[in-house]
Each structure stands twice: as C-alpha cells, then as structure tokens.
Length: 458
Image (cartoon, rainbow, N blue to C red; front, side, top):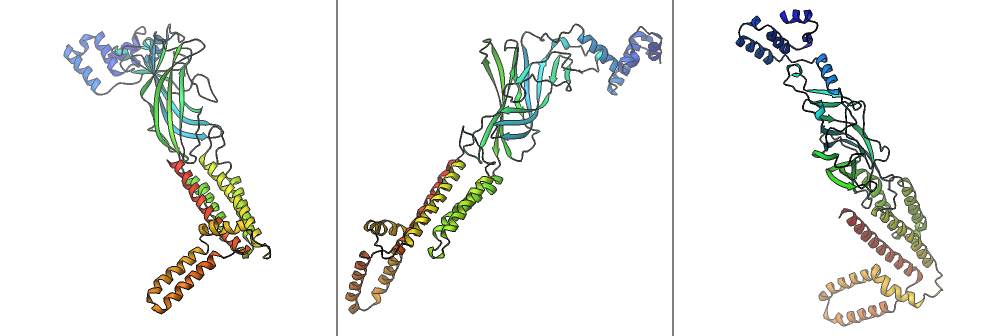
C-alpha cells in the first residue's frame, strides 16, 4: 500500500506503478527501511517474490530503454572497425529446378548475427531486470549489406521491413529475413534422367570489404532440419563454404559465402513414361524381320513402328532437356534407335525387292558367294538343321548293321557334295537376308542399350 500510495503522491518519481512486484517492493523498502522491520525481513521478502516468478513485461520500461539506446545512434556508422557477421541459411524446400532456363529456386531464411556495442544495457539494473531483449526495425539500427550475387531476378540488398531485428542485452543482434531465392545453376544433363545436380546460393557483402565487414559461417552454415520433401528431386547433401575474392574495380577483397545443395532426380516417372516405351518400340522394330514375307505386311508394319516412334518423341520432346552445353546420353540413345528403325525400313525394302525378283533372272555369282559363306552361316539358315540331322545320324549309326556302313558313308559324301554345289534362288536369298538382318539388328540393339545404360549408371 505504501509503494502504491507513494507512486500516486510523488509524480516526479519513477513510474513504479508500471513495474513488476520485485522492483516495486525493492523501491518501497529502499525509501522506507523501517516499514518491514530489520534487514533480514526485507531480504526474505525479496527472495520470496523472486522465487514466485513475478517477472512481467513492462512497455513503459522498454519504451524508455528504446529511446535511450537510439539517442545519438547513427545507423550509417558500423558498430566496430571490423564487424564479424555470422550467417546461416535454413532450407525449407526446393521449389523447382528448370533445366532449360538453368535456374534453381528454393525457399528458406537466413540467420544473421553480429554484435553492436551501442545497443548494450545493464540487466543488473533493477529497472531492466526483466528486459533481456528488444526489437528494432532495419530502418532504425545498422545491419550488414549483403546480396545474393548469382540471383537472376533480384540483385538488391537483402531486406525485409516486416521482420524485426532481435537485440539482446549484451549487444548481440539476430535477424532472420526469409525469401524465395531464384539463382543461376550450371546444369549437366549428361546422365538424364538419372542425373545429380549441385546448385548454390552465393552471398556477398556489398560496400564493405573484408577489413570492414567479415562474413563467416554460423555453425554448419546450412540447416535442412525443416526441409519439406520435393516430388521431383531428392535432397542428397548440403554444404557451406567461405571464400575470398578480389574485386577488379577497386582491388579490394570481399568475403563470399556459398550455400550448396546437391539433389538427385526421382526416376520412377521417367522410367515408366520415357524409357519403357522407347525400349518397347525398339523391340517391335526388330520383329519386322520375323514377319513372313508372304504375309504382305512387312512394309506396313515397319512404317507403322517408325511413325509410332516419331509421334512418341513428339510427345516427350518437352520432357527431354534442350541445351547445347551438354547432351544427354538418353538423347543419343533415342537418336540411334531412330536410325536403326529407319534402317530396318530400308532393309525391308531390299528384302521385298529380292524376294519378288523373276526366277528366270540369274543370281550373280558374288551374291551366291556372299549368301553361302557370310549371311547363311551368320543367320544359321539351313546350316543349323543340317548339323542337327548329322548329330542324329551319328547317334543312330552305331546301332545299324555293318553291311550298311559303306553305303551310309557314300550317302553322306553325296549330301556334302550337293550342299557345296547348291545354288540359292532369289526367294532363298531373301529369306536368308531377312534372318541375317534380324540377328544383326538384335545384336546392335543389345550392344547399344548395354553401353548407353552402363555409361549412365557408372
């Protein structure tokens, strides 16, 4: 009651009615030592009030402290000769990574911390016991001038009028400006769609060189504990580094912080919508050589598959990255498959041309030799069935009678002589050529597919 009445009577005294109970009792006991008896009673009363947790926010005290700290404060003057500003980036999510534009967009906020001795106050003072920190705006106190130097849409100094700066009693200032940062990213699409990309945010001081403002990393430099999963990219790792560079305009050294993010593309979508259809169409183009010539559908089937691949590539053209800095192995692979499919159309035309030749027209000697010694063995045409019959004959021969052995050997010699003197007709050459093309086409398809995918994965 005394303290309250005293506050009401003494208008020139400090506005103790606005203070918490600890300050109020302390003031009352100081003004009237005898009101609570001896010194021990006063100490006990103070301890009880403190232990009861009677601290409270007081706007009047903070307003007076606020005015006191900003008195004669010049925000254009840096706090010290060399200001140490520690910075960390808190990554929230990856918005997008555009291959064609080579841009990288992320959301997050910076954590900036530095010391300003001009904003110090003594918490031991009973008036400021409860004031551990205060808030200021960027228009009121000094802050580091830094920019994202590899930004493609905003090269201005990082600022945010809506985010206050938290100032502690020891002069430490902490600021957390959030934002969506769109930066340039050097994209390598060689291993698309199984590619891994590394993009970064480069933060550099502006106006202040390293002898005036030294940028350092706060803790690890990059925090991803609040990261939200992206549907297209998987976050592999994050790193933060500090470098120093000399500006060619003024020959001064400036500190630069790089916050790197390494991501890997999720491949399920691309595997089901690009790779699987491409492989299926490539296999279908090889089956044209299995289609009998007599069916009359070889050319129609071959052209249908070629048109299917062309239409499919038109549909997925927007999904395949287009850049001249690097070429995707997948793009080369699809181009080779198109060439093979076009080649199958040409080979089919040649097969049909040979098949429908006039039987009275003689087969050239070189074509007979080519068919007999090159295409026929490689295509296993006629030769495989001959070896199979010979194997059966050798198995049955020991069971035959001895009197038949000379005649059997004579028959075998006669068959070999007939095979050596056999002349291929146009129809037989067409069939041999068809079987030969099938094996060569399948071999090329397997080799090219294995080599390309080994290059992608290894």
